[in-house]
Image (cartoon, rainbow, N blue to C red; front, side, top):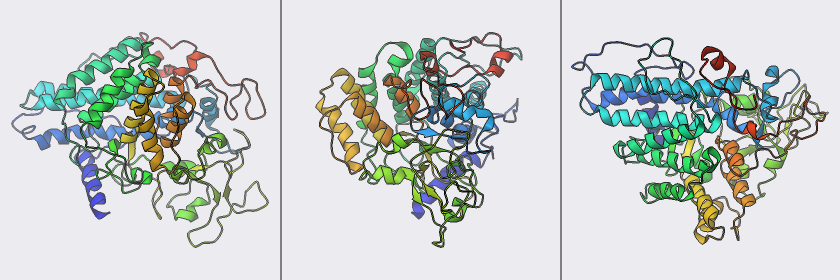
Length: 516
């Protein structure tokens, strides 16, 4: 345990010590002259400069950012309005109902996160190119691949976006929108062009950085969703990208599912391919205990700040797990709650006559009067006793389990009776302690991905790929009801988020996505 903690501290310190960059501040001080003889003479100096590109990833979990766009729009998470709490102008309910608008915070936040990261990559690429120091090409390749990661997110969320690869541009620079296929081709070409330059190692030195395995994981996800993105399936290419990772022998399924998400997870976890190495002091931004726990949960975990009593799962999704599934116990917090001393955690404002907090999988309504105790809460990333709002747990972007499941799905789509595809899925199920499937179907594949990758920012993408994003689920119905003021949207256009109004106002060359 001490070794894991030390490795993680070293990685986080490596990323942030030089720059001390806030996870929410994507603007860096620019220096127009750097003497080659004074800097960029060693590999360590290059890597230190890369820190700014990676610290920007801490904003991935920002409340109005990618995690909200991917999770709250799906059938696994919701942010109900509990009286005066979590109304926020109604935008959380609009995301759940697919009524999101160009003015909504999540629409703006995810866009800003991605283009902030792209801008930082472009700045560093420009700097390295101008210096033309020996060895810089390798690090430029790493930055260009990280930039492609941000564009992969934009491709998925917005589809049609401008492609910006230059940093030294005029003040009135206004790039035009590129169509989704052009963005897809750009992401693919950037990854493939730079992949040979990337470090092939999978160790503590590459943890949290883009290496060859991360690049292949990006390609696997790109090809898995190619049909949704461009109309042309790329299943065999997805399998090949997965095999490139599997054949290294560098990864495997962690013995325990929970090892992937603990406060001491890090480079020693064999399953992690790419993660954001959060730290409660030096790499802040992962604040799920604040978002999901009840006010009274402060006493349960001796938290240094009172939680906000918001995010929870949908009852139907919670019930999709078998009772013996170890992931059900890991992923959710349900039932009566107690303080750290064993006494009942109570809520004087409870809707129930019994004041003890009791998290119920059932949720009475989306809003405006969702019960304060309603909803299974997110427990996937365990909380430390006495912790501050920010967590030490790293957030996994790509796991080996996802590579196995991605390969299995691609093989199944080419051959629904594939024995190898069935075996890959059953490897994941075996670790969860549940019985093997006898055959794969669209229904059990999608459900299994949901159970395995709950709250890892994959669900919206998975639902779209399986043609289930416009399904009805709790409080999202084709006919209005008491849970909301307007019925949900079910048209195909909601598969893409709108281009933020602030961006359209600033750049007349951008074109809004259809339906907004």
